Image 1: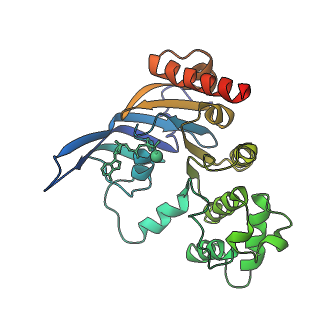
Image 2: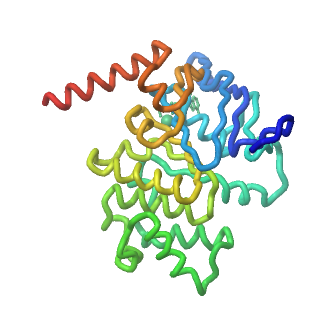
Length: 277
Ligand SMILES: Nc1ncnc2c1ncn2[C@@H]1O[C@H](COP(=O)(O)OP(=O)(O)OP(=O)(O)O)[C@@H](O)[C@H]1O
Ligand SMILES: [Mg+2]
């Protein structure tokens, strides 16, 4: 219980008033300014999942890139455990940051090098972050493969990516992310390129990691159904602005904003169309 007057513990991740504008065009094209984030604020608590939902170009991936420090904000703060991560840091801090915040991308076919066995990227992550030595490397890799449901792990470990399905590759990508022992996993459309029949199994795996390992998950998706399934809270974005935020149930059952209602209506229509076909 928190004592009255005691400071609130900081959330794992907090964005405060993030602004980000891109300028495109140049010598031959007219200059254009795109506002990708306009005063975006949110909090993500440990062991919970937050879904960023919005149409194409609403700024979801930009926020992910800002959190990963691949992009710089024009204004605002990104705090991890209450510490501003956008300030300049000494050498080595970057590797430490990477060990806490990991990413899984949309395309499981592009994310693994076809030349290497699937164990390779996992081994590299373990060694680079000092989480295994040469002697315990293989057992650690096998353990991670089991964690993501690639069993029997001994059968998968020496395979090349071409011998795996899209869903299995996405599991390898998740194992590689888990190898460094992150607190936060950012998953940008992790299931949108997968067969509809295996989407749910990947979401189930993420839900299990959240529940059993206390992993915090930032799920980026167009799909409100996936958001509802995995996320405790949903934040709806439109053109770089937060339209509304709430528990997944509230956002889906009683959306307040017309944009959210329109998103929901488009899903209902799509579901109707696919069911009718
Ligand atoms: N490096 C960049 N240079 C110029 N404009 C950019 C850049 N990155 C993103 N943008 C623009 O910023 C806006 C937000 O893009 P972002 O990729 O964050 O959207 P998104 O919500 O992830 O979309 P999608 O669902 O299609 O992946 C878009 O208008 C995009 O064109
Ligand atoms: Mg995107």
